[in-house]
Amino acid sequence: MGLIRTLGLAALAALATLVLVGASPASVNTPTQLCKVHTSLACSGQATTEIHMLNEGVGTLLNNLADVLCLTVLVNNTPLTSGKPQQVHSSGLIFQNCGTTSSHNNCAVTVEEEPLFNLLKTGLDKGVATGTNGRFRVKCEDIFGFIAIDCKYDFNEVEFPVGTQHLTANETPIEFVAGSELCPEESTLDGLLKSLTAAYILKGPNPPNVALCKVHSSSCAEKDLVKSLHMVTSKPPVLYNGIANIQCESSLGNATVLGLAEVQKVDVTELAWNECHTQGAADNCIVTSKSLPTLDLSRTALNLGDATTLGLKIGIDCTILGLIELDCVYGNEVTLHAEGALHKEGSGHGMVTANKVILKKLEGSGHCPESVKWDALYEPLEHVYIVE
Image 1 (cartoon, rainbow, N blue to C red):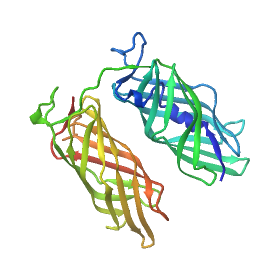
Image 2 (cartoon, one colour):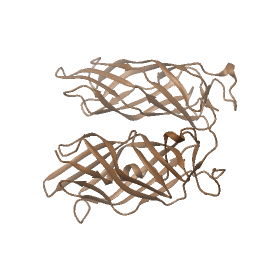
Image 3 (tube, rainbow, N blue to C red):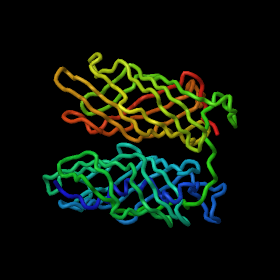
Image 4 (cartoon, one colour):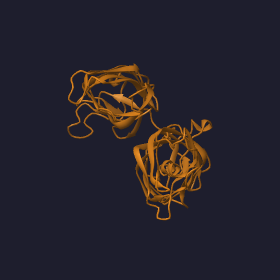
């Protein structure tokens, strides 16, 4: 197996989502906000709402076969509201002219799951960025005319120091999740990106508490707080994978809403799937919850939020065509999109959406795919609003 020492291209994939963002245990109580101006230690009314980035120099993937160069990396990102941490969504990555030859055209770097990163301020315009999800693929053909590599990497819990309008990875470890024979079990990142728009790491306002409320009010009264959630899917949920996609006729979830906090805690007490099968079959799969998750709900805008799963484990037991047996467990910390009731026309009581989020294989062998993509839309049985 080839040993990849430094993964510069994948570094840029991660770095491109993170202009000047940060996280640190010493700063967990510091509200952080990316700011357009640096006139004081705190950001007031000048929050950065969009970040454009371009690489400085050439991104490089070094291995014992050949160097892979990517000449251009472009990205746009969206910082959310001030928080502990502040979250930053990637809105897309573009990699151009990547290859192992002078023509730079025999390699491709692509995004399989758009990343989300947490940031916290650690010093004056300094910080560390921590990935919560995101997956990238580095694929090269015709190295020396006959060798190919195809490697996938996960950015969950990967940290990057940042500052002074630059973000640098210096032999930063990253997790390998799947790939061809030449892909390593361990890799590190090197790379440098610069912001094309101002984004300073400053202290932000303290984020308000997040409340799930029965009415849409600027301040939710105690009597209107949602104490429990009951949800059911409004369309058949699907677990996409490379063997056979698994569809269930429905899925339901019940949860207990804990006390008010800047990040609202929701304890899932039931998550069940009904009448599950592969395409063209009937009831040939059983999908179960091996471990019930908790949800960290952050408010991102008016009546909108992100819910991050903690401790989610889903079991799949299928017999496909009478020949292929799947007995696998999948899980990951993934971010679900939450909308409050009536956020837009036709949304009903609200929505919690898993938009083909990637769950990694935790247990299983043989035919078990390395990952599945969970696609589902859950709707509460009663109106629920996301308010301060």
